[in-house]
Image 1 (cartoon, rainbow, N blue to C red):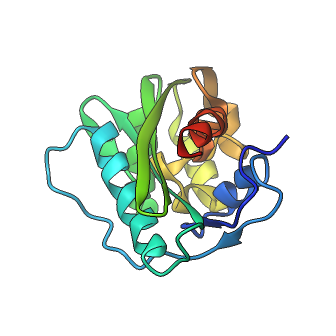
Image 2 (image 1 turned 30 degrees about the vertical axis):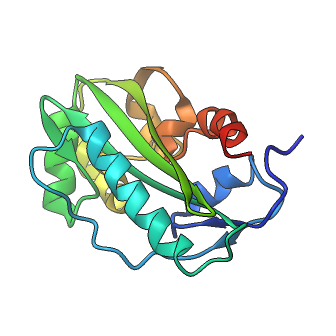
Length: 190
C-alpha cells in the first residue's frame, strides 16, 4: 500500500534519504534544493531542522506543478546543548566523536511535506547511546571516510553502528528520514 500516488520529489541529494524514500513511494524524483542552510543562532535543534526542511521543500515546490508532493528534510545531532551538523574535516569529525563518546545524544530530523501551497512541517527525535570511544577507535573510524557527510560525524547504518549501544525512537530517523511519521502525516495532505 502506498500512501501517496501522485508525483513526488525529494528535495535532497542524500543517498540515505533516497534509499528511505523508496520505502514510502514507488517512484519519486530527486532535486537538489539551492538554499542557504544556516539559521538564526539560538534555535532549539528541533526548530532548526524544521526551518531548514521547510526552506528546502518550499524552494523545490516553487518550481513544481501544484499537485507535486515535495519532501524536504534536515537532520542534526544534539548533545549537551550543542548542535552537531556535518563535520567540515577530520579535526571537526574527531571532536564530534569525542563529544559523543560514552554519552547519550538526540538526533532530530525535521520534515516538510509541501503540495499545492499547503505544507506540513514536523520533526522526530531519537535518543542514541554511544559506548565510550578510545582515541584508536576514533582514528580508525576517521580513516574509513564514513563520518564526513553525516550529521554528528557518524552513520548508524554503517561502520558507526559498532559504537551504538542502544536507541530509543525511530531508527530510520537517525539515518535521516522518519519513515513511519511521514507515512502517517501523508494522510493529512489528502
